[in-house]
Length: 259
Ligand SMILES: Nc1ncnc2c1ncn2[C@@H]1O[C@H](COP(=O)(O)OP(=O)(O)OP(=O)(O)O)[C@@H](O)[C@H]1O
Image (cartoon, rainbow, N blue to C red):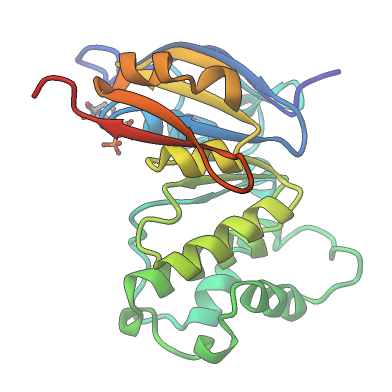
């Protein structure tokens, strides 16, 4: 079966400088959630930028349903892949509803989806993130967490097959983190998500790619890729696994080993 998303020997680096990412190969089937983890500077955001077609690979290919995304029209890719980024240099003078409606831009010349109006799609996305009461507020007046939820709603309005999220819970308080994570899990989309919270990654993701210095160090189902040994080697800390009661769910704890 052709993977939904596939990276074949993908590498990227600035024109004059050392590679930031080298020889990344992985594949993801429809509906799976892939977590991208690794220390600061490991290459996580760069990997995501290659997947949502912001960066063009210097080596290798990114394939969507078997087709190189650089052989596809940018708009066609945007109809299928949406990204929620850490920084959003959004127009602060736009309202929440207007920003969410921007998610519809790639579809503007396409035939209407199953008869749903553009307004209904935007209203659904606002509802999913409980943003109805903020719909007419200007972006510049929102808190960081509220803005983050707007960016998730905009990505949902884009109606993508693949959702790429760069640290989406960064600005969110614990309730909104849990809500956004529950929403992401229930979407049924193919998801690529970078996370610093390793317990959250283990809990949410089906598959994990662990990066270090721009290379894949571990890849596979979360329980195989995220062992105390692989994490300790990459993050340079001691890692222990505790089992929570009464669920017996594994929970990772971390400590410095050089003090
Ligand atoms: N356009 C660029 N030119 C030069 N170096 C770059 C460029 N983009 C990224 N880098 C470098 O590549 C490395 C990986 O960056 P990247 O943002 O992908 O890491 P990350 O794993 O997402 O880090 P963090 O956890 O800190 O967000 C960093 O050392 C960064 O400085």
